[in-house]
Image (cartoon, rainbow, N blue to C red):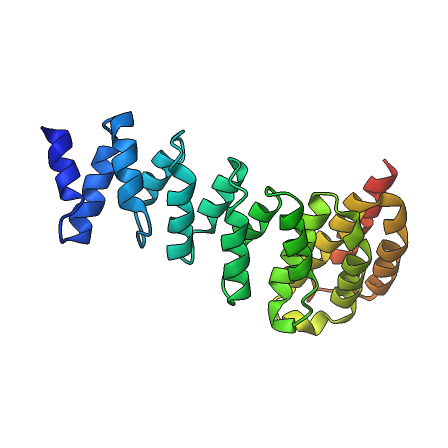
Length: 234
């Protein structure tokens, strides 16, 4: 009786009633999965608890439903990542389309590309190759992921990014902590990709950062890069 009432409420004119009914259905076991997968398809801003419940489903309708949720919601990159981790390689098409349309490209979506094979890495390289200043953060995230997943062909470009960060400190304005964060992350990425080749760009960066030693107005970035170099010798 309760189950049927909640199913009926999924078609209520009120979005709030629908969402509440969907949440309650997640407490009633596996029989709720298929009705919820049908209901959630292309749904805008469905309850995250319902999505997370359905992500545990083994239904053949899971991937199509979750792809539609991702397409209908700009900030649901975590859904794309999760189904990519579960083996949904087709989500790469949705992520690529979002990036090409000027949206997408968040951290979860870029990481999802690392789980869909060579086509995903190719798309990451495409993002990484876009040197537009306004897309720096997305480009950096793509390069960092390519480094994390040992795509060694990005080494030279990441070296360039590190040099740019060291030389163009004004890029981040007064956000010294952010400049430090990205510079250290670039240094770590190079060290992880190829410790031997990384010695040259990291030592060059260290030399160019010497003027900041003891500076009260800048983060202690020199010691952070020096520590990365020391750890490569351990």
